[in-house]
Amino acid sequence: MTPPAQFNPSRRDLLRSGAVLGAAAGLTGAVGAPADADPGGHEPPRGRGEKSMVDVPFEGFEQVRVGLIGLGNRGGDQDRRFAAVATVTAVCDIRPERVERTTSRIMQQGFQDTPPVGYSDGEEDFLNLVRRDDIDLVYIATPWEWHHPMAKAAMEHGKHVAVELPIAPQLDDIWDLVRTSERTRKHCMLLENVNYFRPEMAMFNMARQGIFGDLQHASGGYVHDLRWPYLFGGAYYPEHWRRRWQTRMNALHYPMHGLGPVSAALGINRGDRFEELLAVASVPKALALFRSEDPRVEPDHSSWDDRPYISGDRHTCFVTTTSGRFIRVEHDVNSPHPYSRETTLTGTRGSIELDNSRVYLESLGHDNHTWRTGNEYNAILRQHDHWLWPTLEELADQYGGHGGGDFVSIWRLVQLMRLGMTPDIDVYDSAAWCSVIPLSHESLKTGRMRPVKMPDFTRGHWQSARPTFDRPKPEDPWLKNG
Image (tube, rainbow, N blue to C red; front, side, top):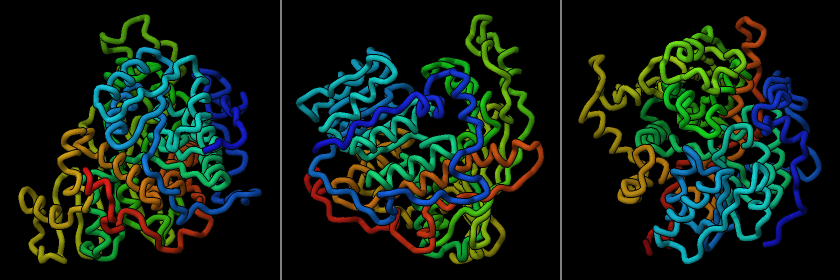
């Protein structure tokens, strides 16, 4: 495979995306109004060569070849899963020791004879990886400000892209990735692992089978105390990158884990779409308080160089859809709080709350106002198991990652590429889910509750049904041989 014309992100590309870590120009790009994507819901016209990626399948690959960019807290845990189902031909991180560790781990698994080529010569060495002609898929697990320039460069060089959350935190960059995908004919996908968790997949099946009746509303989000070790304790590298986003945007920074599964169940972009968003936020107090009171945050800690934290500790968004339904989206990584994704789904015949492990279904004869929990709840979900889980259960246990969901999401992506099928989660799903970040900032920035229109990234294709997680189990030689 010959790569297309060489793409080198300009300094403007990098600065606009905040890719120069800590640069003031990056801050301006993070909060500035998009140049070509009005938050009032207007969509930019397609440019030359841009055509819809709806229903566009992968080419089909005998063996998927992968390049990994970012081998830190997240990417450094995904390497062995990719190596178990694909060939990892190249890896990249700004730390040479991480490249060496990943290469060693991959070779120890014994699935490939040739070690991946390593790239660790500075922040732009990823460009040498994406220029290679022996890579079909680039996986990106770097700080958020790098997601846009890296994904764009990969597509410009003829690679499909799987991006950790979000694909980009700014609306103009989200649009740019959509348009780059449409022009290069390469898929750009959010690798949203929670969509592949076993309970979420069973909930999707139940919704599609009408067990909840006509779906009316849902909730989802990410409530996870990240103060230590993630925001202040050095679990990320660079240590400050995620914390400093809270000095740049007053936004619901990470909605996708809860929003993705309920959006799939509601048929977003497949018969319905997001229409309007309204955001509210609490006062930002928790991070500064933690920094001042926790003895582990020493006087020379990098957080003392942070600009003031402007992002509220708790964000709630209400997203309405064209068909009159709504989703409540939650985000809080600053407050003392047990982990929750706040996932619920309600229809005219029943409700489910995944975090509380309980369900109530008139369609199954529940009529005494008592939640079904425990063994009864588990039995109902198992009756609606997605075929992926009984098929991959042993491998998911072996390779793990959030109860096996990480492995299932990677295996499924590689399967779709091998068999020449369309993605379960496409660029339009990825863009819609991630757009909550900049649009929540837009809703909040006047200091009062203000709804904003949400773009239609599909440009009208949302009105047609198309397959996603509802496809039956395909014939797959890998499963027969594995």
